[in-house]
Length: 393
Image 1: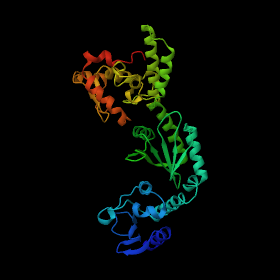
Image 2 (image 1 turned 30 degrees about the horizontal axis):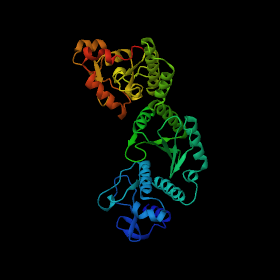
Image 3 (image 1 turned 90 degrees about the vertical axis):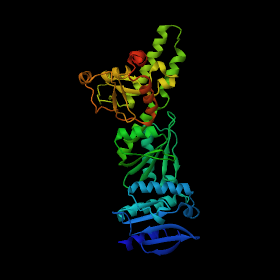
Image 4 (image 1 turned 30 degrees about the vertical axis):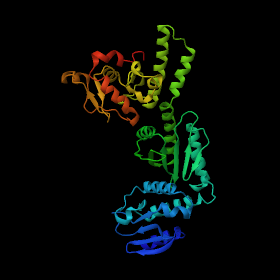
């Protein structure tokens, strides 16, 4: 099989340099620099072929920057999801491993499209054609990404006038899509909600979801992404500021009205964010659920903190009362921590389980949870009133 694979590669890489045979494969060299190396043996189990590509040597040949080539290779490696041998010379350059000829052919098709995108072919046709690009743009538009899309190599980048974060979609053969998020916590939440694994790394997309299969799945992902982006942004804060500008606050009654409006906005945001379910128990009877501030309303430094969706948990009534009162808190991993002030009989009566945990925490929740553990937990007599910030809800 290696002869057939070698022919495929040599045809696709015909202008990348002079052929040099290796004991385990071959390499191509241009201007005394190795552009790529191909290995048919000595690979990790299951890998038919492993390829290393040099962004430095390839950049002047194919007209992309080293960073663009490195990013493209990383994306292709994520598609196959295979580990490769990186010891010795093999570890010098980024590369990709393939377990079948089909995987290799898909990669070479993407390689051809990648090259074409810098050869005067419009970016929207270089990925998978105008039709696919149009379908993706329609889905993004339906979701609320209303600004004109941008084309960055194999990525379609979408933005909205309603929120700041950007989202990228990279289409691949067989209706397979990579989706990148400019905000890590945003990507964490969406990945959790659609039950797909998340990759976090440095670069323009600190959070990425790989392996979105099928246009309908992509469509649903974009809809959920836009909804989450709205509630993690400052839309709630802007709505509250509009109310503040029109409502006098000279009397206690008027101040209570303003606070009630703010907490209504906060609750609506949490219902959207947590999809109408208790973050700890999964209870989905929305009218019963309470919008609980992690850092209490009264202790927030400004309205932005008060209305920050990451400063809130949608909780079942019992958990909400215990959390607001400082009788329970949650660990960094979301595990329920019960105060030593509650004995085992009381814990059993309250139905507190050691298996209870928050489902869907992101990095953006952590500072608020740390505040709760330090300032509210196990201090019911000192902070019960301050922490019980949602009685108006």
